[in-house]
Image (tube, rainbow over all chains, first blue to last red; front, side, top):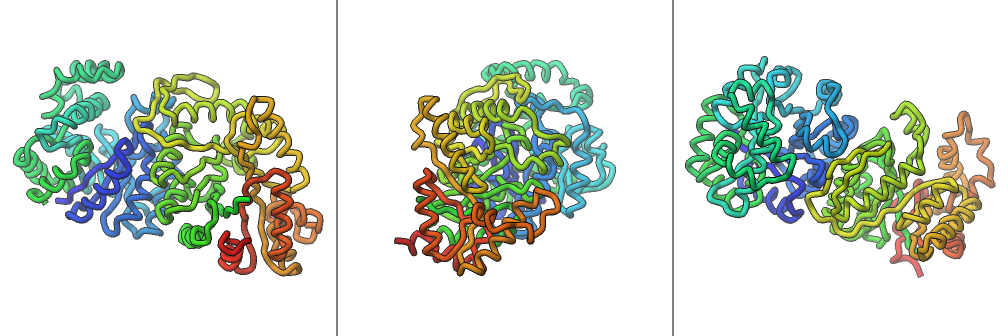
Length: 281
Length: 298
């Protein structure tokens, strides 16, 4: 199994620089940089990471063609591959609807397929961030970034993948206990739950909970998420002590998952990354 | 007079890295990067240059406010400013109309109003304000950056009387380009507008970015002629032969070193603070950059 670690543009420049160097040194296979309109754009971050790493694969995960012109995604990754070696991956997905709405973008026409086609024409490596049956059925990609990490949810999602492809689970992660970042973990999990697919919600009978979580997020009243603590952490995060995380990874391995990506806020705590990787790596 | 370098994203990034490093070694003030709309993403391009240098200033000169969501412009320029350690200047504007027309399918409309609103919003966003607006150009609902941005200057690269007046009103600097004689008047428009809006015109940095050719006179004219011909290429079917001496003289900074130094002195007296040496520089660009670096000047 490969291992990836996620950094986002709301983290400090120093944390990202030091963290990515450590990730490469200790043997992570992938670095993933996420996108959110409120964060530093992933392109300047990836350009910086490219300059301070030499081997590790660096992915943009995810990047939205609704927020970015597909042409800019194409030229960016072509330029990175040409200049820093062929080790850059595009993780494409529509993006979080709520965040996109804040900047005036409503997801209407299907831009995903068109953009994948343009990227593949340039022989770029494309992973698709997918959570629902429709996107999971896409066959013209090199891999899937699955926003689920709960084995029950993963099994459900895997049913919709038509052709066997490389699958990575990508979820908010944290080595616990961690007083400083537990709130961030909970909010990140809530964001994943709130953006989850309707069919998925029906399948697992979590529609009411998700609706309430969406309401809480829209009011930015994050303290109220505490009442869903165990639900959010159990179902939507890779968190716990080293052994609990390791057990979960072994379960995912059995399901045929090819990569575990430790999503934010894990990368804020460099010591925990080292500790965890010394066991699982 | 600050001496800077001008390149565009049409230059392959590996060559750009070399030329920018050389400029840094020779104490150039900054490198302006012009955006070829069909070329590489300018923010990634400038970010790569930032990660390959340590001191030289960097700027987009310019990128269009028409081809990206304003949030992407905001979080990209902020990211470059942070990652470069505060060396970045955002040069923004409308962009080349024919190129934009190809991308947008129509001429950009309401240019003054859009530039005004977007610069106003960008300043708010990068200083950490929460934005809510629903206008003809933007639709933001409680949008706010989740990180702090160091102070970031915004320059405008614009043409036309109304746009220049706007630049005098709201820009930290103005990037001028084009035949010199009309530019003298353009500088005055910016200064007058600045005064009218209660600003000190001297605090607005005026950058001239024109083709630059350092060479012995005959060679210089030939090189300059080719470049001017390309610049005038937006006028259909214009051939090299039709590029008259007067146009070359007016659009290019060219000649041997002494002649160029005299021209730079003239430009300073017009009110320019910074000269961006635009391509082709000369027969051997590296030597030109070296010989015009501040290290080699009086």
